Length: 342
Image (cartoon, rainbow, N blue to C red; front, top):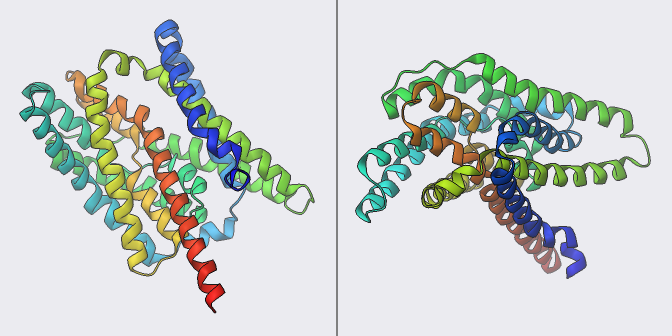
């Protein structure tokens, strides 16, 4: 049984925990360097998390996925007509509970709600590829979702922020373009080149295995860097972290399963449904933090709420990855059993 699961899989949660602890230690002892290291370390970590995934997908598959109107329409509907309102609703619900329990005052509560709303308005256009890859989802479809979301959120985000938070904002297209270039186009080009150069070589499978290990190391490195750069929020506001964590866990779990189960219901397979689930649940924290800093700079807890987001996203999304891999194993077992019966 141990050999089937793999020692790396068993020890991975332990390594994630160690990365978090080391990040928190560095955030306290080397605080002055945290932001500077994060500015360079996070893009590097994300590149080496996304690039290995890109070597597994063909360009023609991506082009074909972009044209799947039925699946794209479902993704757009869930991402922009459902997800922001679900996130906002859960934010209001839990903050109301916290208020009644005497855990928050009115002023901080209002700021947290706005921060949660900002977390919900824009879908992720980077890390979602990694979660899709780790869960054996449809990578080509996931990449096509990122491409569509990169365009759509420029238009929808100001409207959603105004409607839900009553604040007018302007989204800088350059910020979106920068993310697309860094986290989509660059690793995609590198992945396609790697595949075209080595796919006919006998050792291509070994290259993929090496890149998978690099992806794991890059994930641990990125966790460490994020907690180094933003870990002071956990130290200074521990109660706020767990309160926001409950809200985030709730909307991640609800949004992912809503996307996944609806997709399964209309006849999509595990791989396609998993891609939709992650597209609907993962959030674009870069946009959320940018809006908080520009439009809500005089409200510190709005900024803190959006800054806590990246700290919690990776552990929570890894939990969803674990759930999906168990689902996949369950379906595989059922199929094997059905074949035996036939």
